[in-house]
Picture 1: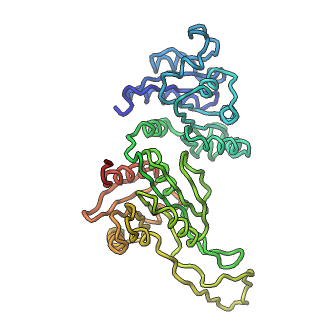
Picture 2: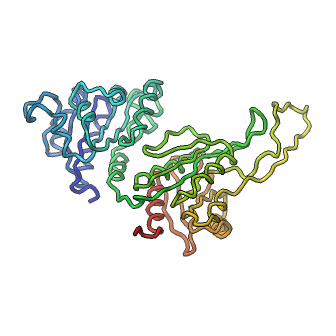
Picture 3: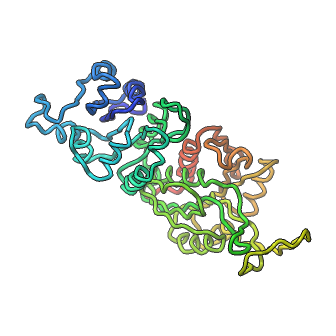
Length: 398
């Protein structure tokens, strides 16, 4: 079982999603984990400690002053032997406590005094999640390399509204926990990832771009970081949070991305080119907004952008290069041609109409030995499979 012997502390805070914590506890125990539960007083209004004790087979802790703990130091004693703390659900109030280092109860004190990583699974009303204060707190927590997020997801909420803020399903949170304990197959390696679209200005207000959301590239960066790599992410314009522990550089145009890659690639062991870089840009950018031509056609002269992947693959002592091929048809044929043309060892191919902007994807890997189907699933799961495949292709460290 993937979590056999792993010592976890499951924290439950006071939200309606607390009922899902029972299923999460059951899944973790079923997968071999040693699960200790700590609950806030508010959490006990939604689900009883007796339920959590029955599912884990261990006493449940709720009180900072519990006399069962030696020296009345529950915040120390209950966390020192734990390898990971998981807060599910994590309410807006509890996230604010974490962000500002407040510790007025047992669970918040445990988190502040911890020596192990922390995963939080946010769960709240969509308006609460989107509130500026919550987003500010989430951004602060993401800056901490020892804190990871599981969700939130989008969907129907108990209040009747629909949107982001829904707690991730227990199986998805369990998968995030397993990822924390995954073998660090890229330990000591430096991985460079590009993600998102580029924007090629036509005039001060118009650009040529594409519909790439950047989600796949960000998932790859996160998976590489989980595998122990030092990850640099060069990102086009996207509305995504930087994965914990990843160094990110923002660019806008293909030329800017090319310059950033040329600077980072010589220091990289692996280059994964996920970005949907514009093939062309306007030859000349108008300094003023172009006006309508009273029905007359407008001609826009385009010139080709640099082929970033081909450049890196052609470097002396080039890193292991992985390309992405987003095709609209003839996936296998076009992927094979790109593999040969770019002279790279591996291509990850998908259908653009299925992938751009979606939460899941279907990917096949192509190398000179043929195809390797990763199947369909959430982008983070496919990213982890890709990283495991890449790790198996790299020369063994001496």
